[in-house]
Picture: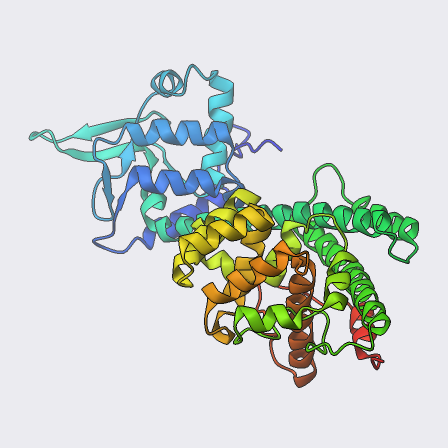
Amino acid sequence: MQTHTPTTPFGRRTMSLGMMASQAVAKAVPEGAQVQKWKVFQTIREARELIGATDRALAILNALLSFHPETELTGDGELIVWPSNEQLMARANGMPATTLRRHLAVLVDCGLIIRRDSPNGKRFARKGRGGQVEQAYGFDLSPIVARAEEFKELADTVRAEKNAFRIAKERLTLLRRDIVKLIETGIEENVPGNWGRVHQTYQAIVGRLPRSAPRQLIEDICCDLHGLYTEILEVLESFVKTQNSDANESHSGRHIQNSNPDSIFESEEGSGKEEEAGGSAAETDNVRSLPKRELPLGIVLDACPNLRELAQGGEIRHWRDFLAAAELARPMLAISPSAWRDACEVMGEQHAAITLAAIYQRSDQINSAGGYLRSLTDRARDDKFSTWPMIMALLRAKLDADKSAVKAGHEPPSGGGEGRLEVSEALLRSLNKPRS
C-alpha cells in the first residue's frame, strides 16, 4: 500500500497524524540523550516490519543519516539535515524522484523523521557569522534519538520471534523424521497394530501444513505430532515388554534376578561378574527378540536429555553432535579410554554412545560408571545387552514422572522447551490402566 503526504488544493503539504505523532515524540527527547546513529539504524532495519518501513524507505533513511556529520546523535544537538532531492537520489543508488518522494512520506508516517519545511518549501540552512547553523529547514532526525530504546525493543521482539520460528521448524522436522522411523520399525518388526491407519493419521496432520506456515500453526501441528509420537512409542514399548514377558515365562524354571525386563539398571552397583551371572538364557532371548532397527536420535534425546548440556550451543541435531557430546561425558564419568574403546568395538560407536548417554542420565545412581560400562560391554559381546530396553526404561520413568507431576498440579520434572516429553490424552489413559 502506497502512502502519500496529504496536500491542499494549492499543492502545499498538510499535517498528517503520523507527522503530528512524530513531532510529539521529538519534543520528548530527553536532554543529554545520545545514540550511535548506525546502531540505531541497524535495529530499525531488523524491526522494519513492525515499524511499517519499506526497504527503499530505509535506503533513503540511510542516505539521510549519512548527511549528518557526526556518528553520535544527541538530544541537545542539531539534528536537521537539508540535502536536495538530487543529492538524496545519488546516495540512494539513483532512486527515481517519484519513488524518492513516496518513500520519504513513508519515513514521515512511520515516525522516523520529521519534515521541517521552509516558507517556500526549500531545504536549506541559515548560518551566522561564525559559520554555525542558526536555522535549518529539511528533515529532522530527532525521532531516531527519541525512539532509540523503542526500536531496540522492537528488534528484540523480531529476533525472538525468528528464533521461536526456527525452533518450531526444527522440532517439526525432528518429529516427522522420528515418527516415520517408528512406523517403519513397527511394520518391519511385525509389532501388532493398524500401521496403515497410523500412517494415514500422520499424513492428515502434516497435510495441514501450507507451503508457508506461520509459527503458531507449526507449533499446533507439532503438538499433534508429539501426541502421535508418544502413542506409537507406547505401542513399541508394550511390544518389547510383551516379548520379554513371553521369554521369561518360557524359562520359568530358572531364577531371574531382574523382575523388570525393561530396566537395564537393576545391578548398577554390582560387579561385572554379578551382572553376568544375572544374565541368564532367558535374558539373552529377551534381547534377541528386540527390534533390530536403529533407535531414532530424537527418542534417545528424549530419554537422555542431560547430554544436551554438553553439546555446543546446547543443541544436538545430528548423530555426530551426539557422539561429540558423549566424548565429553566419558572423562566426566571417569570412564577410562580402554573401557570406552572396548565398548565401541563391541557395540559400535553409536550404540556405545547411547549407552554412555544413558549412564550419564543416571550417573547419580551409579557408583562406578566405568565398571558398569565394562559389564554392559561384556553382556553385549554375548548378545545379552541391547540399548532398546535401556532407552525404553528411561522413557517410561520420564513419562511416569511427568504424569505424577501433572496429577499433583506441578510443572512436570522434564521442564519446558523443545526437549520436553509431552504426554497425550490417549497415552495418559493407557498409563492409567492397571498393569497385569
